[in-house]
Length: 257
Ligand SMILES: N[C@@H](CCC(=O)N[C@@H](CS)C(=O)NCC(=O)O)C(=O)O
Image 1 (cartoon, helix red, strand yellow):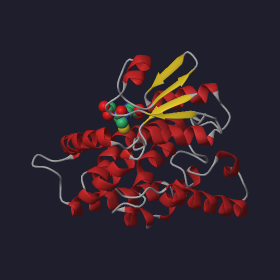
Image 2 (cartoon, rainbow, N blue to C red):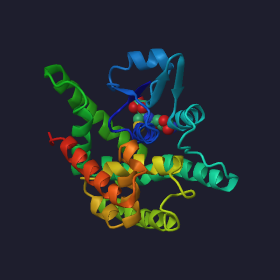
Image 3 (cartoon, rainbow, N blue to C red):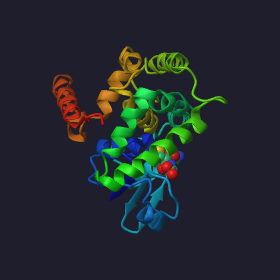
Image 4 (cartoon, protein in one colour):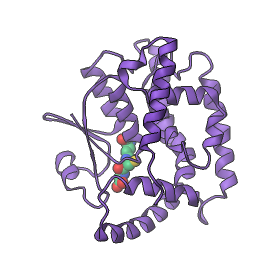
């Protein structure tokens, strides 16, 4: 199984976390934003994530999630109960579309965060003289593109506005998690993976303090990044797994360029 992705894509992160949760082995290929030949050829479109498995090529994180759950039904992520299933689908849609308008401005419209997010993006590809020039152009392109997608008429909203909105929404999410720790029922569903895919990128950025103060949100993020085999471990072992996951992440943390 091959996952075509960007290392900064929330939708790719959602799929990666689902693959991990289900314990499925996969190879990840980071598509370069200026070189999408292979992606275009196999999927006939330019966006990531795409999952390729033998002859099957699935585009779009929601369709990939559904396909994975049908093909690998252990640890289901679409609840069987109709009311929970509806809730999972509605929350997933909200996380993909509505929540992105809260999280993406934090990552890409606040100048310091933009530089760090772009450094993470760049770090997935080889660095050489040509790459440096390309990233000068890409930097300008992404600045304009994110401003067009998430900005206001006269540019980016003030940082305080972006962070206040984040705080409001994180409070709502934290309350929505009060019953079971998950968005739709007693176990992780596709909605939780969509939430994870968006929000976990804030760790280490300005705005993380706001997320960190919401205990249930943080618990969900920690739980979904753990390697699959450890996930079902007992309360005590869970702490070890969480510590492992933290150490693993710290090692991965990339220098700021
Ligand atoms: N609804 C799609 C959204 C995918 C998407 O927007 N992908 C972005 C990256 S996060 C992309 O590849 N955009 C095309 C581009 O960058 O040219 C999904 O859930 O997979």
